[in-house]
Length: 200
Image 1 (cartoon, rainbow, N blue to C red):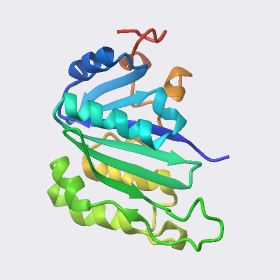
Image 2: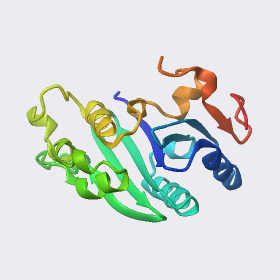
Image 3: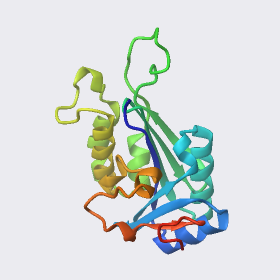
């Protein structure tokens, strides 16, 4: 079985603002330190990989904090989904392998993903060409040397957009289980709503 994860990167509001809003919403989550304006949110409920729940959370957070946010979901290591939220609206959706759930369909190129919108939302206009290349590549045809799979695509996109690259691969249950990359001290992640690891 491949890798599954879901998370959200919030741009501009700091960790304390995000924690306050999550507390108001009574969410179970971990929140990273803020790096380069990005704060990573690992929410328990979106681990079910329900697109409606992911969109609901992204719209709530980006509306309440008047900001941009990027949700990501990797399904079985094979498909990367992204959602761009700006001030309560879903502005863009991305699906790296839209034929995945249709066994009769031939694999084709990714759908969605607007590099101009993404780069504008995260103040990375100079990175648009590389972001576009990463979004459009058909990895089943080895279109990008060095980008071997969807998690690697996600990590490369995160770097171009200024998002801490640990967003690729990390999720609520991995943090709850004690796995945090060496980049972070585990107690730097704060949990909320009765979470036994560092409740706010």
